[in-house]
Length: 369
Image (tube, rainbow, N blue to C red; front, side):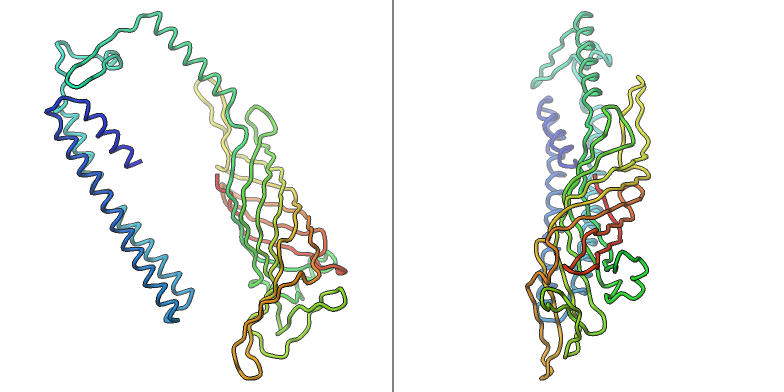
């Protein structure tokens, strides 16, 4: 938007009389200064990130410390760009005000009225004035009304959202919620992450609060076992067994592609125009959605980290489906305000074959228009 403003100013001043060239030169200087500020700050940030990556590679920083330093550096340079560019914007505003205050004076015999200004074009140092007849005005207004009516009739009934969700995973035994009390998995460390897109369509042609929401998403589900145990296949079933060496990590990850479908009630207040027409607004108030999903697993693996008998730190990555059901389906629901909501989903089919264990997830969901 900033560059667009500068470009428009430079373009318009190029059509004014030759004595106004000073404005164009000053605006161009400010434009170049803004570009220089942005480039210098981005280059400085890039060098800092490279240095942090080098420290991380040399194990002088942990991954968490490196991420924190990168975030702080990005915040600092974003703030510096904003501060420095704001100063240049103030200079640009002063330049524009000076021009408005009298440096650009139309050399016409009679001053222009507001209506006359719409009918004047400049070409170099010459001014071209034309008149519009009453009939032309009526025709123009009629066409404008037709375009407006067309827009109202064809306003968007479908919007698109980017979805991000995160939270905790666990398993229920035999659909019993109380089984979470003696779960074999670490509750707060068994996490899930979800990324996807959705489309939100009104059920009616006129603005309403009820929507049909559908889309697709990728899920990364992690289950971390407690008490130094791992998952192991045994004759068509997956068992949880103890491990000989002390484990620092025992994590089972399965990645899914899901196709969620929801009914959503969005209680955002509609916009009412002066002529009585109404346009619906979304993601600006309370929202509630209920529905389900179907999908399939893209891959499963088990991560193990431990010290062996020789006290050597060892990492194992085991690729296998661990007797998981490939296809999955279930129920999901969310309730929230604006883009943020509390999110719950539950698999109706068992996670592992020949068992009655089902995955349940709870967390925070973001739907960005």
